[in-house]
Length: 158
Image 1 (cartoon, rainbow, N blue to C red):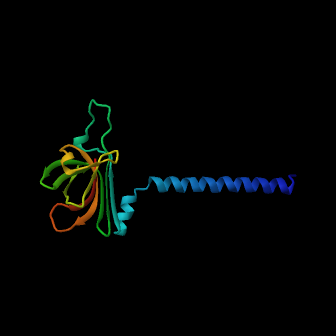
Image 2: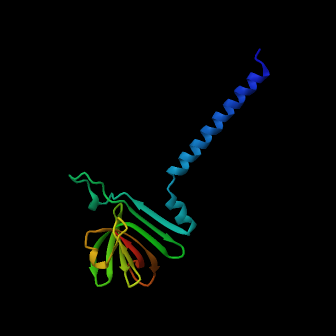
Image 3: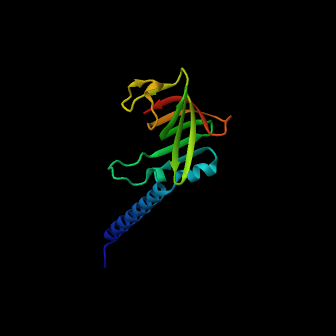
C-alpha cells in the first residue's frame, strides 16, 4: 500500500498538469478566435485584417510577401488603416485602396495643414513625397458625409 504523502503528491502533480493543459487549450482557442467577429457583433469596434489574398496580390515571381492590410474603426470614428495602396492623388486628397479577399475598399483621405507625413523610418515628409503605388498607414477621423469612406487624416506614414 502507498503512503498517503506519496498519494497526495501524485494527486497534486496530476491536478497541476490537468489545470495547465486546460489553460493552454483556452489560450490557444482564444488566440485562434477571430476578434473582428466578436468586435463587430458588439458594435463598438470593427477590425479587418487581410494578408493580401486578392487577385491584385496573386503570387508573383518576386520573393517579397504581399503587404498586410489592416483596418480599425472605433465607435467614436477613429480610423487606423495599415497597408493601403495609394491609387491616385488629387490636390490634397489621396485615394487609397485596401483588399480583403475579393472585396476592395476605397478610401478618400483628406489631408490638410495639420496632417503630418512620415517616412517608414519616422522622418518627416510632405504630401508631395507620396506617390501612386505607395503603401501607407493612415490615422484620422471618419467623416460620414460621403459615399466612399472619407477619413480626415491626422498622420500618413509610408
